[in-house]
Length: 55
Ligand SMILES: [Zn+2]
Image (cartoon, rainbow, N blue to C red; front, side, top):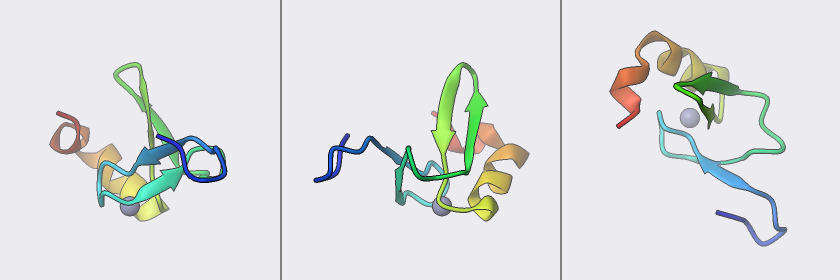
């Protein structure tokens, strides 16, 4: 998924917000996949219970 500037976008699995992959500093590798987050709060929530957010 891309925005109008051609940046790659990801969806924050915790809150559902759209995150710019090249700009966010909150990312985490889990099960061979990289997840991006809008904030440290969402990233911490994911870390505590990734199974809740990954299908
Ligand atoms: Zn979030």
